[in-house]
Amino acid sequence: MKGLILSGGRGTRLRPITHTSAKQLVPVANKPILFYGIEAIRDAGITDIGIVVGETHKEIRAAVGDGSRWGVEVSYIEQPDPLGLAHAVLVSEEYLGTDEFVMYLGDNLIMAGLKELVASFRERRPNSQILLARVPNPNQFGVAELEGDRIVRLEEKPKTPRSDLALVGVYMFDRHVFEAARSIKPSARGELEITDAIQWLIDHGRRVDPTIVTGWWKDTGKLEDMLEANRMVLDRLAERREDGVEVDARSEIQFKVVLEQGSRIINSRVQGPAIIGRNTTIVNSYVGPFTSIHYGCRVENSEIEHSIVLEESSVLDIGHRIADSLVGKGVTISRAERKPRVLRFMLGDHSVVGVL
Image (cartoon, rainbow, N blue to C red; front, side, top):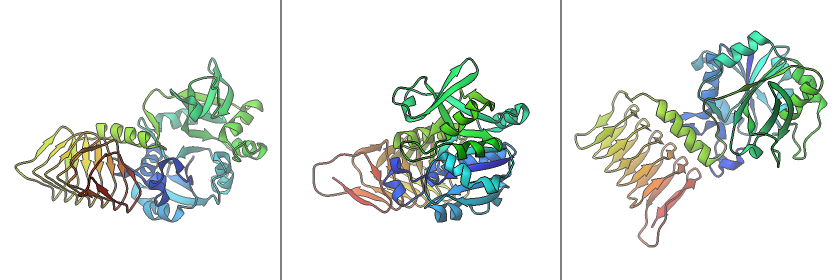
């Protein structure tokens, strides 16, 4: 069995961050989202993984490499244009061959992992197994309608959903999905929809098993979803201090806080769950719960909570508490001399913002 991770999307809902960075590499708890997917597939016993890439392929190749750090072998499959999930399956046919495979959307997180789900698929041997979760906004997802334990209809982002069961970004298929993907037509948005391919399997007598996921799952395509994913992952971390960490006598570290190598906490309070990246310095500041600050950052004379700060950024001399924010790479947020003021940020990479 092989793994297939889709990482070719443009990430329009996370702009401006994704103007300069692949959405699958935006970190959750200081680790790129994509890495959680690789680990989940590996932990399910799958060591051959194909990654479908698009215009950000150079960045993803540089971050992932050959997969050896996870004990897997990674191959890259180029999708020239993001023409739908079923199209991504078709461009991967040569790599997948006749093997069964698990397809994982590279910007999704499933906290329970895939081990039991993959084991169930291998044991029951349906033509496809799809994961479903109840959501409050099903019109933003592919939606499944069930009769008992049987799927009768799938629809992509329906205006009037027939249920609240959304397709989670993990699918399992055998070789029949290639015939299905070749048989469907592009949707109104010009894409080959995986929901249409699965519906084709159902309509042609193939066995598609649903599994309702009751644990935590998140599609991290939007800012609020990124922050929630960050919160959930941080809440599961164990407290840890790595080598070279400095915490002076005037500082307080409370609850679950991860201090990565070379981080410095000076006259500050860090309230977990939180993670402070390597060689990051916190001075005369407060870092509140559910905050991840990546490597090489500096927070001085400021307060921040429930936020994600990417690498080599600075927050300096801010008189208000920053919250619910995603700060890109190489960003500087500092006090300006003039008035008036307000603080709520989603900043692109290498921005410089003067806060009044």
